[in-house]
Image (cartoon, rainbow, N blue to C red; front, side, top):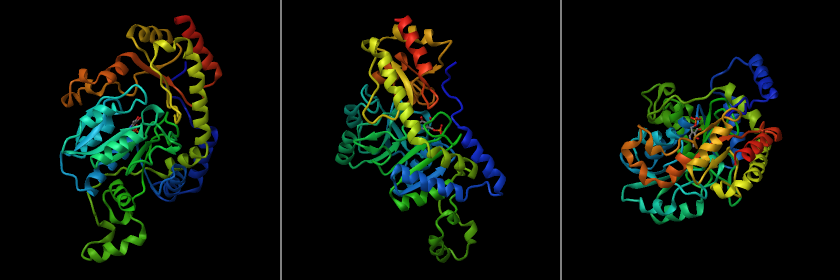
Length: 382
Ligand SMILES: Cc1ncc(COP(=O)(O)O)c(C=O)c1O
């Protein structure tokens, strides 16, 4: 069975973990976490990275910190796509901001850019991009709109590590960005996530919020300032802001450091598989919406049909050999937790993706044999 997710840790990743466990007594966040953050910043080409325990935690810290940093009022509106992962939206709600859903498009599967601009009100403050399933959103269009209305741009790159827009990695176009290292993503730490930014003060807020709001988490060069400001409080128990405990561990950082050494290779294999998949679907391409981009970093192999009958045909034919799932979470306006934010029927493209789409897995262990099986199934089905 070609599963959606499978073990993507290599033997050497496990070996490094074993060696690390044998030689350390420090497992909570420490020097390996710092080293992984440094390596990730270099790879991502950004100034600051903060390692947390999931992509969802990264999204929540990002929204919460950005709200605090820019002094946004409760209820300020955040434009979000109707197809993305759920915790991307719940982070907005948990930060006491208001999500405003925008339909998606069938080219880069980010926002319907016309609807994006039309959805702006006097309360809109943030555009929260999702670079969906490894496809870069059209940053030029989004930037133009953001500049016109003085909006902040945030990027969720949880499914798009290494995707590029005009040769620049996604995650470098707004004030902050997030990544998930969950099992099945381009790089895995089993569970984990990263928040990236160029802004040191904003990054300090990410660091504080990751760990209870504790001042001692900041770089030691910044401690004296707070010791002087709050001399009546024990510096080790000085809380500068509202925080969470979203720290990750040294064990997960060790995996991240090892996986990162191979990330370029993993992305190349994923993209090679994606190319082969494009050839495989070529005979039925008229039946499908195209999913491709110059800057893709393939997350999965998606099928978005123009009609439901064809979708169901292939879905059924794959069932025993190749596991599949909806495109991310389908049309989010259908979900009980988001229904109050709009009528799902108004999000027509999200509905197409919901009804006519599914995806199968892609990772560095998807090989020619599996792709040949996919090809055979498609040939016999249509
Ligand atoms: C677009 C997007 N955002 C956020 C997340 C949350 O990441 P995690 O599963 O690490 O919490 C995911 C998870 O896959 C995702 O796809």
